[in-house]
Length: 295
Image (cartoon, rainbow, N blue to C red; front, side, top):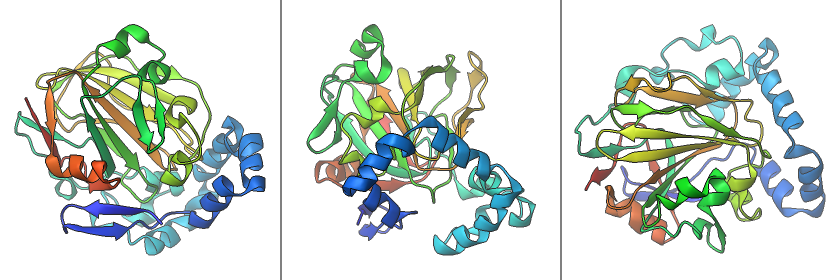
């Protein structure tokens, strides 16, 4: 059971997890863990499932997914009948009014839909994955010089579950460098898996880029792949000016994670998000929603 804080309703809710029984069995049973290491975490497994979700054979999954997880069809930019495969639906664009963006220059917005954990004054050698599990920023980025710039800064972890809108966006006006890709495994990023696999973010396939923002300094965007994520697609043009809210990219099928790192004294994260993080709960947010302020 995954409980999160819904700040809009000011209440705690239980997350509907796609493949809940499968995840618990895989990451809790001896046979499941063995199968995980032998097959499920491998690129081949996720690539094959990603291929299937790109074919017309997967189209029949769309309506069942909408019904099971109460997906709001009014937000879709095009009719569901026009989706050619499951990934076409999964990476759907939304109508503009579905995700209003706070354009105040001092406001930090969420880059996507999901559940957020946030940390200030971070120790880059003991970043928190979950209680009891930590990792080093140098291991995540494989770049010591870059990692050291973010000592005592802030970290925001946005976990996208399969039911979320899966496009991610820029948090400010600015210029984003080329994306650097790091190969790795394909563990799930669900909390069930995070509590079982040490240094999971450092184990998984991931991509990162430096976003030179106008109002929040140099921000590291890290996009982490996961089980059954066919691809991480970057749609932005590197080294060209972008505007707040512009699309940066999207994940194909699967739960995924975007992690943001900010330099020291650049932002102040909203107190309710920090409070929920300190008590062990994620906070549900939507793309474009205020999650902090510029210092």
